[in-house]
Image (cartoon, rainbow, N blue to C red; front, side, top):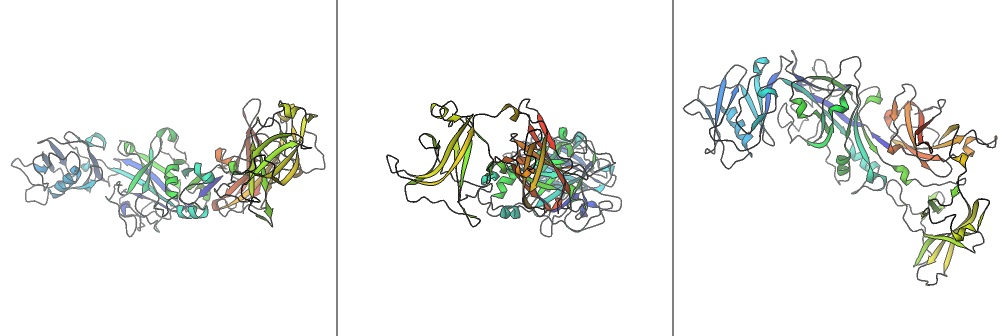
Length: 619
């Protein structure tokens, strides 16, 4: 089953400057799209900036030089025997930066920022129109105080300081970051998730999907994206103008909300967001119109089991290698939650293999075979509710026995005390099961072969309580008995299907898009076989065609809504195939059909079954 979450809020922030507006102050909340782009030295209204990284100890008397947008030059000299950093000037008109000799990298960026910002404060005749910001992990952000290409100046660097912007120069780099938040708290409560993942949720997979909506324009390609977790809350805001950026409100490139600001304006600091290790490579973006799919499984599983969730949302950005290259990528346009067509809104998809936890509740037509693994179930149902199966006294355990009809020969006995869980990990008190291995009931067994008549074994299935304290095992209490037929093998015509048709039954009669689960039953009927003509398909048992997966597609657009994958597996209960279909609100008013995939037994190739005449409207 695939559970789809819709976003609570989404927006994007940018440092882009236009002729009449400063988009770094603009709010794009409520816009129909989320725009992801990066421009390199294309915008004459942009402020040039650079990012420096410190990687080791600095040498005494080494120098570096900055040139501001007005052509002012400041040369800095590093002194390892000076433990203060204030921006004073020596006799050669060089600005002193004191770096303790014992200081390897820790605090270097902070000292440089202090000195650079103090250059114009002291009465030293020097002027430098550059702002400096200390970032985490010894990064130094430098920004010219005036816009234009005159700010694209060269930076001369000493050893162990590197410049991430191209060619050791300031650059006018305009870019955007996407912000998106899902209600994980509601998901946790809805699916009753506690301090650990249980049932099918133990092996869940989670994906963040952003839908591409660009049409008729040139699209960027061959770049890399990274996903971060936000450490601060953001407010979506009420703005929506993405053309002139005239709307102002929270959030923007200076503030995220009324209470939280970015650590450094126009630069995402590691105190604002942390990488969760999920990336999309340039190979996955080779055309330009691809949807963005981030694997967030590890983060989701870690966060969802917390007693108090701290999730504040995700941030999507270009990786540093692409932010700081000399290329432009304009513009990847993705659907926001405010789109009228909800098909293109962001999704958080949680995938679970719930079919592994399915239990056959009505299998009166089930065919059983010798030399096959088989699971048997015992139900205790009263007034529509499962009732606990309780032993008659202490020391009794439940057993399953398969014997001859006259009980003269016991073929196999199995314990039936394993707790039964549903896909939520909840123990079901009124169900017990016993499982046979393929070798437990073999046609080649001396005990079995003498009872096989007409290629079948007529047997008796008995559920009973046995006193474990009774050494001779003579004290038993029968719970339930039923007859069963085990066939020797499938006939040859049961491995080849010539004309399979589907009959689909919605157990709730209607499909309603309200973030709920609907049970779907499917019968695969081979019309070339001889069946009683008066029987409708629901009265015929489905062919067992092995493992089957389903696909859901929109009939009106032809787009695939849920594709073939492990989480769309179906369960065969001996009579029919079943699966749980999660219907999010964004599926409302869609007219859908189902396509099914299975593997041909003889060739191993994928086969598909589709009834083009079938359709159902989701209400």
